[in-house]
Structure formats: structure tokens, C-alpha cells
Image (cartoon, rainbow, N blue to C red; front, side, top):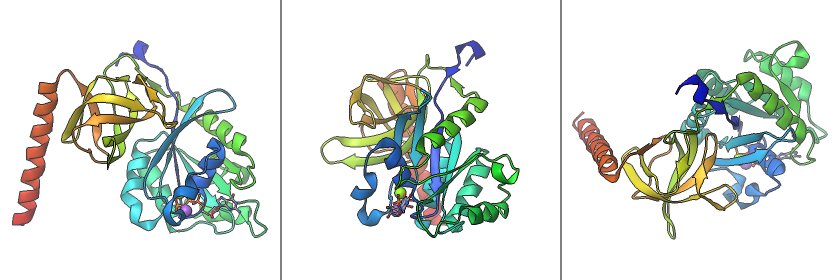
Length: 291
Ligand code: GTP
Ligand code: NA
Ligand code: MG
């Protein structure tokens, strides 16, 4: 895209951290929802994507990842489609294996980290201990003379939520994030499922261009005509621009999380690409079976 076609876009922020350190609770507190309550065993099993407006007026897209050890690949995918990682560390529990792993994912993806020390409402909270533990992972927060932005928060007591949003916006302004909204859309599948009533549903993040209802899309070996676009609020929308998370209805089959999405000129082209990738997949599976 030509430089003059680039327009400012909201940051995509992935929330990462050890299991039960309060990632979903923090997002719930920010969005004033209660996603945690609906989760089986309080464990996040999928990636959620939401957009909020910060107190400074800018939009922020959040991606929530599971902390459970079984979901490493999903966290890696989250880190890859992101501009900023918010590393949630519970002040009563400290740095744990999935905290370290999240740091590694963020580093591998070259993404700046903001540290959110959560659960500071707890009497046993030791935020100072968290700061010093992070030094072992070469994260030096500002209050220790380093450059990593940090904030003490409590999802439960709703402490410093606005401050967290302001820090995110500050960090994103430094990054000068831009995209061309006036081109065919490209993005990434965050998750996909086969919904009994709605058919294949892909939650996607638009990264460049604008996606419109009626567009022909390809993702991995699946394609379709966009029948409807649904926002994180459950409303339909005629279009989704850069950094917007959106559910896409109309795929012929469910694509895979991590698949790239692209708009193509017509159905014949979409079918051609999808068929080619299906054959590729089959051949790779056959090759593996021989080995
Ligand atoms: P996974 O997605 O399963 O990795 O967990 P998570 O990081 O999303 O944590 P979750 O939001 O499910 O919270 C885990 C537990 O910590 C829940 O019982 C929350 O109520 C509790 N919790 C989260 N934030 C706070 C907080 O700020 N203070 C206190 N006291 N409890 C909290
Ligand atoms: Na949890
Ligand atoms: Mg969670």
C-alpha cells in the first residue's frame, strides 16, 4: 500500500498470562460483562475478541487467550496477530510457567509488553515481588528504572482500569499503527466453529482493507460469500475495517484458527484456491501416512 493510503487504526492488544491470573476478569471489568461466569470451570477454552473505547476516545481491540498449559498454540497465534501484549500477573501468585511462556511468545513476535499486576485488592498481594521476579525474564518495569510500562490493577475492585486503557493508548501512539482501509480485506481467523443454527462461523480480525457483506472470501481451504458480519456486541454490520474483530457468516466450511483470510474477485477464483489447498492438505496427510 502507498504511504498516503495508510490511515491510523486501533491497536490489537492480546491479554496473556498464567491460568487464573484474571485475564478474562480484567476484560469483563473493562467491558462490564461477565464472560467468566459462562465458562465451564472458569477456564477460557477459546480466544475471545472485543473492541472497547478508551477514556481518551480511541478504540482498542482486545484478544483474550487461555492461560491453561494445553493452549500454547492458541497463545502463539494470539501473539502473532497483535500489536501489544498485556501480561497479566496475579500479585498473590507471581510469575508462573505460562507467564514466562507468554513473555517468550511476545518476544518471538517482536511485540511490546505492558505489565498489569492484577488482584492487588487481595491482602496477600505482593506487587513488589512480581516486579523483581520479572527481572529474571529481562523485563524491567518503569518503577524499577526500566522501560516496560506497568500498572497495578484489580479486576474485582475495578482499580486502575482507565489507567490501563490510557497506558495502552499511549503505547499504541508510539507505534503509529496504520492500515489502508480502501482495499480488499485481509485478516486472520482467530477461531472458527460449526454453529448448529448459523452454519460455519469464523471469528476474524480484519488487518488491512475493509470487509463487506457480499464479499467473496477464502481462508485456508474454505471459501464463501459473506452472508453477514456480526460484531462482538452481537449486532450485524455492513462492513468491518482495520483492527475490527468480527464474526463472518457464509463460509462453506469452518476454516482453521490462524488461517489467513483474503477477499478474492469471484467465486471461480475462490473455488480454485480452496480446491488447490484442499489437494495440498490431502497430499501432505498422505505423505505423513507413508512416513
Ligand atoms: P484462564 O482463562 O482460565 O487462564 O483464567 P483467567 O486468567 O482468564 O482468569 P479468570 O478471569 O478466569 O479469573 C480467575 C479467578 O481469579 C476467578 O475466580 C476470578 O474471580 C479471580 N480474580 C480475577 N481477578 C481478580 C482480582 O482482581 N481480584 C481478586 N480478588 N480475584 C480476581
Ligand atoms: Na480462569
Ligand atoms: Mg480466561
